[in-house]
Image: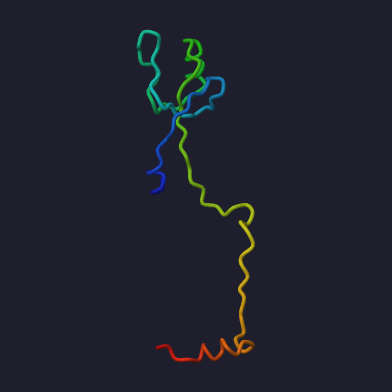
Length: 104
């Protein structure tokens, strides 16, 4: 985990049991009907855990969503770089004479 990862705080999202992916970590403890702790926050969900929650009538759980910073270049360039223009002061006598004057 990099330095920037420690700055980013995980977000939580409520998601239905039917949409869960195996291995997703719980963001909040899950309690049963009578206040009994069923699963602790941080538990990675297995298919067995998901099946047991469904049997107990639990339809949604909170999972962690960790934002990430992607250090990749954009797929398309942002724009054409500005062209450099060179002005030849020989063609401009007034500018040439002023450029040669000492500064006071």
